[in-house]
Length: 526
Image 1 (tube, helix red, strand yellow):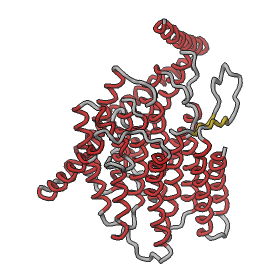
Image 2 (tube, one colour):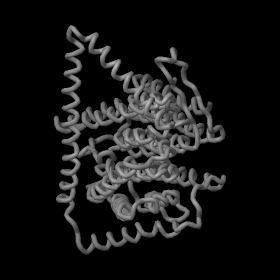
Image 3 (cartoon, helix red, strand yellow):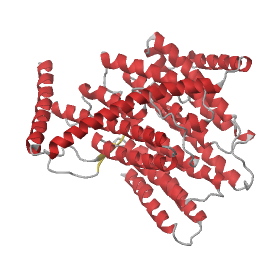
């Protein structure tokens, strides 16, 4: 029950900060309030490890024939690492935001903490209903932030499309709930029927942009790196958790091969776009897309541990690079730790993720090896780029800012090594995984040598990759417009004189469809 206290802190303190921001209280004290309370919440999430697994009901909705499930939280070995990741990202963002001390903004700090609270609810959701509510809040916040910062009708249109894709993912999750209800089993994350596992992966993959490969092709809007990190990574963490939970369900046949093909395409496109981007901020969506594809492929092959490892690598290593804004030579060891963290080398945090390469078909394995090498090259290149001006940095700032960056690899490595020390290691040290991590590194070294002797033009490649994503977005926009027309027709029918009859007909068709699914499943069992 300790984790409830962390949620209350992260949701109530922002309200206090927003209220105090209109007073004469200095902004520095508000930053101190937000940071100390976040440290307290982060510590609570860490020590809640001793209580897992634990289910926490949040309400008891009745009648049961309308609400088959009530909101609840589930803290277990799947959700707890991601809960730690979300709180670590929030704390690191607040600590590193001291580098912009000349731009004090209490609203940004309150937004970071509040978003971490909603993200915490999303990753420890005990059933799809709780996750849907958290997803809705996160999507609305992200869309509002982006719409306020993008310029031009085309970019606003793409934000709307992205939001529509997220809504489509939510509808698929609702569809999975109806499917499970038709089987006579309320869908919870403790008991996921085999028949709905594919729908869960489809819902999460659609929200992450992996199914089909899609990411916004407009330039990332200007915002503080601290808030921008949470805006991008919290929704991803909320969807990755669903992928890891669905990985415990055996998926085979057309579902599995479809997910593998689309994940392979996504990881290749994202890796090329990542290495050809101008800077780390512009390439961030492709980082998320690429590692989400790794996690989805592992889940499709029934490898929940590998899926979780790739998801955590995306969050910790990616956030470390983005928050590494004020760069100094003596701090380069931090992004180096971030790069090692996803290298799949022996005894590194991502080592357990290397089992994915041996489960993939050979053609997909080659693509994933090359893509990981390209992600590694791009990570090193972005880490060595000049950062923001550090003039005006005082000595006390050089204590707080590096501590925020150090917190990320320290927590990341600590999570994995603590699990191994406690005897929860999921991979055997006798498998060929001892050398699997060397393949992407050798390929990365070759790519670096080639790029020095045969320089590539960035713009043409970036334009080609952008045109690929633009083509996919045109398809999504066509689907969005078609759905809008269909919705308009339904609305006109329901507004007419026969609206009651049409509503009854739709309800009857829905009930009959669910019952037919249940009958067919019972027939298959017999």
